[in-house]
Image (tube, rainbow over all chains, first blue to last red; front, side, top):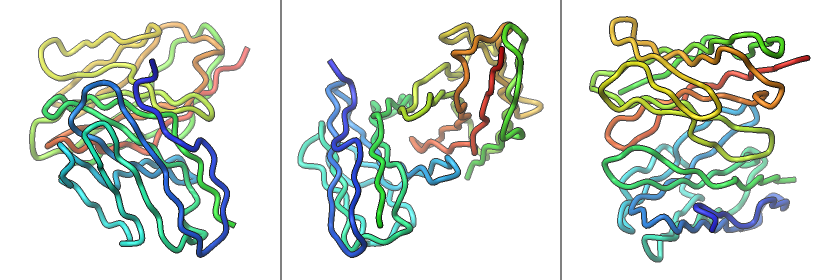
Length: 112
Length: 111
């Protein structure tokens, strides 16, 4: 009965690799988000999708590409990983217009 | 554009003492305001929210917050904290479906 789930929970990989993080929500929400939390705990929006369409794309390197196969899923693919990509990535979802977002447990990405 | 300022990066307090975590926001439009809590190695959980109506908002775990439009503040309070309240607390403002977070305040409760 998990509301917003992410896989994997931990991801350790080497520089230059390509990796994906998956997110699924079973709340019936139509808007999904990706946030990055850096080592100082600062949270910043990366992307927002509404009904499978991109509506927010902050200044994120184009090595990051979100993909939304349907309203319940928003995956994050990262190419050519760099040391600075090490962070915790959170997926969230909401109903458009409510602004109350529900967060997943996070994926801790470590690039070595 | 909006911004959220949490003035204290860390607040140490003894168990059963009252606590206030400060949050100020700036926005050119009406905003919704939220407090989230993040326990160690976990995701964010919504504590409470202000959308409209009464300026005093009650949330989970005995927390409450007061929206003050003239001071552009949304401070979080709890009259008596427990050890289990030790966590990172984030204030956030929403406008046009974008959540802007403050930098967080670490609440450290000691016996």
